[in-house]
Every structure is written in structure tokens, then in C-alpha cells.
Length: 193
Ligand code: AMP
Image (cartoon, rainbow, N blue to C red; front, side, top):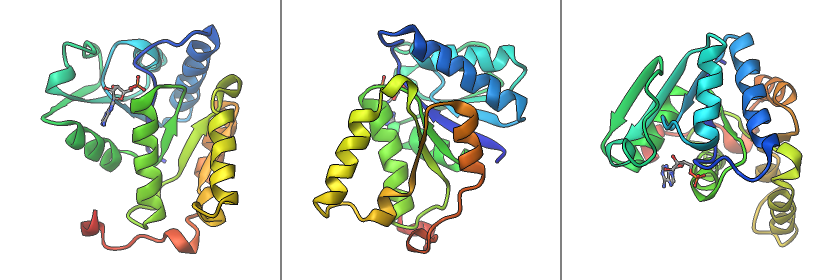
């Protein structure tokens, strides 16, 4: 993997463990020579992740819509900051630039972004791994809900299995590197997107 896209909170969250996990993920990516693609902001977990990645000598590409440049305060020191016109363009660019997707703890935006990539994978529009970094059990309830959705037969077991999860960055990145798309998720015509 050359680059991983990380979705995460524009807030720092309540616990210091979220900041620590963002820094550990940055160190893991930088040490492995994997570049970071993210939303380009300097606030919250997003800012902590990017700043640490730069401090470790890593490559950071931010993609931010013009309307959020001031609101989320675009990060000033990135390797590259791409300013786009819309939220949809932001997500599409981030998806193009990355070889896999991780959600650190975050809010509605983080969830929406990860689940869009997961549903694209289920539909066979890409074959890149999607993963949760489950810091201190932050995503336990979400994982339990997805199991419920599988039990209730709204999510197929093979689609449920396409969402990787681990408690620490090194284990998660290793899982992603070994990810092979199941037959149900093989890429179809990308123009169907
Ligand atoms: P949050 O997890 O809600 O703190 O948001 C994390 C990031 O996702 C922030 O940069 C938000 O601006 C961004 N975001 C929220 N909704 C969307 C969306 N529909 N498309 C792209 N980015 C979004």
C-alpha cells in the first residue's frame, strides 16, 4: 500500500487515548513509508494525526472543500493540500488517492465516509480494504450493531467480513496489507459509481 486514507473526528473526543492512538497510527504509517490521505483540517483528531505524521517525516495529502477551509481551519504545513468544490468531490478524490481506508474514532462525518467506502466495496466498485481502528472499544457498539444487522439478514456474512477491525495500528495495517477481496466484491465497471 502506498497511501492510506484515514477518516477521523474533527473534535478531539473525551479521552486522551484517541489522541494517543492517532499518534501511534501516524508513527506506524510513517515508519512503513505509507502516505496519509485525510480531510485536510487542523482541528480535532484530524489535526493531531496530520501534525504527528509530518513530524515523523511522512507524506500527508489533505483534501478539503472550500467551504470548510476556514471552518475546520485547513492545515498549513501539509505535503499537499487539495481544495475542492464540494463534499462529494472531497470523498471521491480521497478514495482515488488511497489504497485503503481506516476510521479512527470520529463522529457522523467519519461514519458516513467509512460506510460509503464499504458499500462501494460491497458493490464491487473498488477492492480496497476498509477498516476500523477500535481504540479503547470506541466502536464496540457499532460492531455489535453490525452483528445484529447480519443476524437479522440485512447484511450478508461475506459483506460483514469485509470490514476489518483491530485495537492497534500495527495489527490493523498488517491486516489491510494482507486483504484479498472476496469473490462477492470483485471490481465491476467503475463508471457505475
Ligand atoms: P466528524 O467525524 O463528524 O467530526 O467529521 C470528520 C470529517 O468529515 C470532517 O472534516 C467533516 O467535515 C467531514 N464530513 C462530514 N460529512 C461529510 C460528507 N458528507 N462528505 C465528506 N466529508 C464529510
